[in-house]
Length: 383
Ligand SMILES: Nc1ncnc2c1ncn2[C@@H]1O[C@H](COP(=O)(O)OP(=O)(O)OP(=O)(O)O)[C@@H](O)[C@H]1O
Ligand SMILES: [Mg+2]
Image (cartoon, rainbow, N blue to C red; front, side):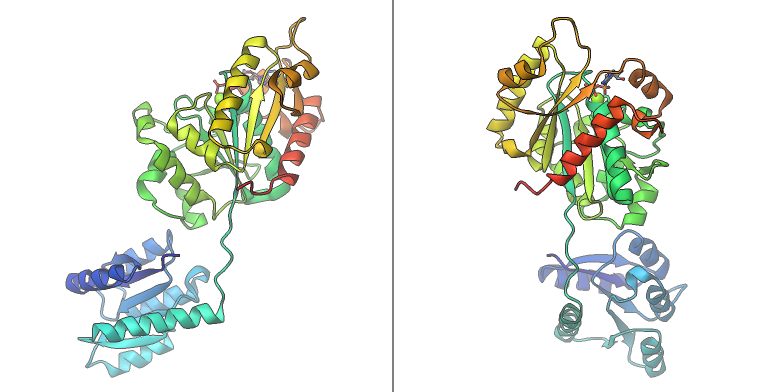
């Protein structure tokens, strides 16, 4: 795991040298020129160690150290002061403010490196690294448009939220014409493109939620697809992979609503997913298309154990194939059947109030609950 160091110094030469030295040793280095900038940065990323200059313009290093010690998220991050030789009293102040070590300017680089590594080693020994969380990725896909993928994604995500509270994020990964936000009556100021432009790695949860996600009253977190069509092309397979890397350490469940497409970014999500929900409707054309989709998934080496085939039973015509026929045709068992409900579902979509949130229990809600239960209890990492 890459360790990160934040250096706070108004001396650009020091910032440059320290960055060079520590990056060469495999650290990620973040630089701040003053305390305010440093505090803004820690709202987003907490480094593994701070190197603070004492005499900074504005808030000085000692006060910055006090503030870092006062925040829960930075309370136990080691701090090394660098200070000019003629300020012995500030060294004492530095320790009183919660600093762990100091070096005197001009300092010997090897000594500083040794002190940094020593402190990091001690911290590791005292507190073993917290277990890296790995959120489960659930991709909702299907071989055709308008077959209820988004409807299911939204309702499944809300149902997971009921069980797992603030652990669920719904990603509108229907890049071209995503509209999951409408079903949830959410307005989005920011989208995944904005997030991807800023972040290369996991962000602090609070910052992520304040800046890029919406929080639905149910507790479900939501990340919008690109709000501008011009940004759609900017999201390729690497961006999708990075997006999942950013979200996985923060959330227990990452539900992705995909477009009916096998373009590269979608393939990436399908490969990364722990579960792929394939939605199918009872129409011959949909079945033929789904057959191709299942073949494509198999060629992409998506394990069949991680695929959940869900029948969205609308619109059921007189001569619609029955459940058994569908299973035989596709050579795949159906995990669940969602009833068609033309009285409820389209109007719920227009109102921005998903049916699963309604107090009275409908067959639709019941089927969603069963599917969610199935999803979450059988959800072991497939790879
Ligand atoms: N079980 C159902 N009963 C009745 N109507 C439904 C059902 N499922 C979905 N619908 C309706 O079908 C329409 C299409 O649904 P939805 O947008 O969820 O499909 P989609 O597969 O996500 O489409 P797209 O490929 O365009 O993203 C919507 O109007 C929705 O309200
Ligand atoms: Mg959709």
